[in-house]
Amino acid sequence: MSELNKDVVDLVWGRPSSGVSVSIFRRWAQGFVFSESELTALEQFEGGPCAVIAPVQHVLCLCMLEEEQKMALCSTLSEILESVCSSTSTGFCLVTWAKGQSPHTSTQTITQAQSQTQEMPEPASSQPPQEQQPSESYCLFPSCSKRTVMSVADLREEVLSLYHTWRGCCGVLLFLYSVILTKGIENIRNEIQDTMEPLIDPVHGHGSQSLVNLLITGHAVSNVWDGDRECSGMKLQGIHKQACVGFLTLMESLRYCKVGAFLKSPKFPIWILGSETHLSVFFTKEMSLVGPESPSEQARRVFQSFDPEDNGFIPESLLEDVMKALDLVSEPEYVTLVKSKLDPENLGIILLGPFLLEFFPDQDSGIPDSFPVYHYNGLKQSNHKERVEYVEGTALVLGFEDPMVRTDDTPVKRCLQTKWPYIELLWTTDRSPSLN
Image 1 (tube, helix red, strand yellow):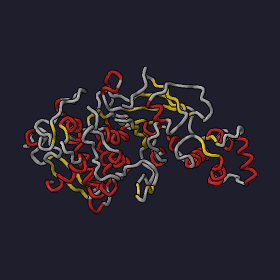
Image 2: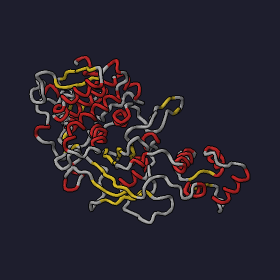
Image 3: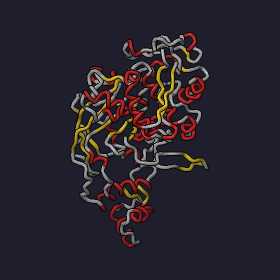
Image 4: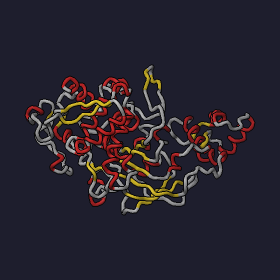
């Protein structure tokens, strides 16, 4: 592994002039540990590793039985490794402790490791259990060995045999390194928009969007829109197909970005929710939420494609183009009639709501009026009574008319409104779950 250590460390941690702080490395040096309060919920001890833990958690959310805990975790890790594998001919790489080595027997001392890291005060947050702390080694790439398996069956068997490794100290990092070597360092570098950007921010310890995308789509692209875009002659890569698990971000509600349909409408009704600093998971068992696109949903998507700044309206000069794109009657006389109806005050704009109401009244999207939902946040301090548990609630997805029920304006709700503009949430707890 020695010849790969530097390349992997550079990709994951970058090359900060002052080194990576011990406190940031310590945050990532945890395993996949289940909450004592929720059998299938992974616990995150400190800020940072949610970029790996949240994508792994998405499958576990649907496994409610205790006996499934071990198999569900290992199956999830295997599926992620399968999704990132560029070619089965190169096999799957699993990084584990070298023979005779462990977090507590590593020959690397703190003094030696500090040549790679910079000692900083520990953050004032909850500490992991004693067995989760790296004892003698703070090196960014501990004494490890690489195992290569060539078939999916062997991969699943090997991942299962390493169950206690994944759960122990540095289990999250060992899995991350496994993902990187399975995908291929050069393949990842070719997909990342800025090759100088590490997968883990060396200052704040947060995982990058490239890391999140790698784990949920198999590709380390840096953007969340659909397809590729050209900008000043440069090709910017986006998401190329429907993901199994979705992604929504509070940053979109603040208009910093626009998430595409491939991430907003995944194959399964599970969405990773991003705040400014953290990742959590929102999920339901209501499969109709990810059913085929209804005519009104298609109309909304097409209308918004002519409204790139997401203003909720378009210039009336674009109405004919929108109607043509939706195969609606678009004869000039009819378009003029529609303009006068949708813009009676001659403001020169067409609002999305009235447009949908005109052409798709009483359109049944196939989504029930209400359905149970759940929210997961792996940080103890972000949960009620500091117990990592799924927060249960009821979602109401109403039409574009003024909703009769209005709930609090919370970050979770604002994040979900980027997918369902008129969603309302009623939680069973006294307070709304936290995105941070």
